[in-house]
Length: 188
Image (cartoon, rainbow, N blue to C red; front, side, top):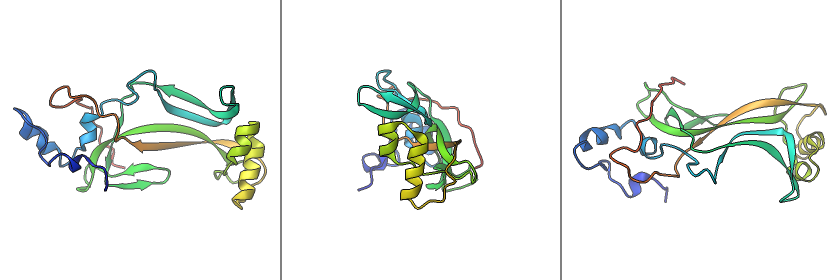
């Protein structure tokens, strides 16, 4: 069964004096938009906001190389219209004019990945080579070989942004709406 707010709640989940207004919003505002006002709220459990695969760091605790990460806590989500379709790299599709779209909260993460210096296309890396040696060039070479990917043998950094849907970390009940987010209306 698909996990959804509607598995437990009706289309009119709100009660009290503001119920009619809040329930009306369900047509175009996803439940998560108000009920997940922040992510990684516990500073002891931050989330990755940036990951750089071109700068491996040796992690003594696990004895392996890992990408350089920037972590943060108590982040406000990004709000986007979403009609349940995604662009590549993952980015929600929808607009205010799309009657099938609702406003949803998203976690945006920026990555620096490995790309072929000549073609500019992303190169698969061999995770084992990367983790054991921290050698980006060797990981790219072996990854491209294993994937039968065209590769010039030279790499360059390339930026990429991914959006992750937010469906966890529902905030404790704090009133009729846990947050009144400032919603932008991107037409993308």
